[in-house]
Length: 143
Image 1 (cartoon, helix red, strand yellow):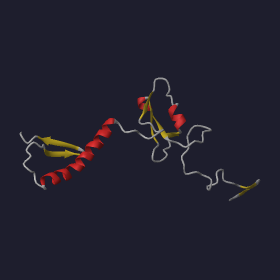
Image 2: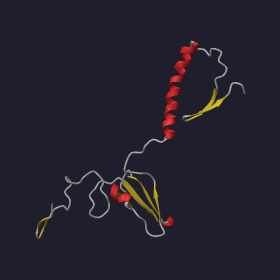
Image 3: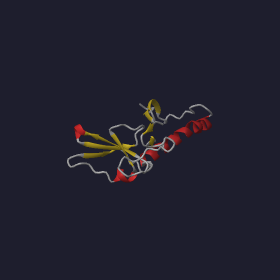
Image 4: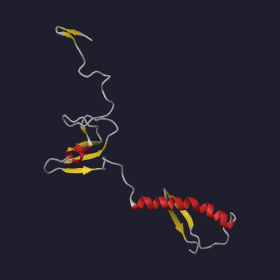
């Protein structure tokens, strides 16, 4: 620390008190930030998304309350990328995809048990001809 005419200079914020949690950018709000606000001036758009990985100088971190009450200037559009206040709930499609994946994982064991590891002469099963992620392309054995 240096000395001044009035006494030793002290840091405005001692380093052992600084919190690693990012706080809301709104004045006098000390709540933890849950969303990041970015203005796209060229498109007159305010984009509110999940909390950014690191703090940017031209972005604003907002708490849950301020992110819910956000309004944009007249003529501007607000784009909300996700609801950052709570965990995302699975949709019906997600649950159906999960059920299909469980069925498919159990299917090879069922076939091996029923046919003794061979096809067993069942010609009505579709034939897999391709895959892309969790999607399969099936061709009927008749075609």
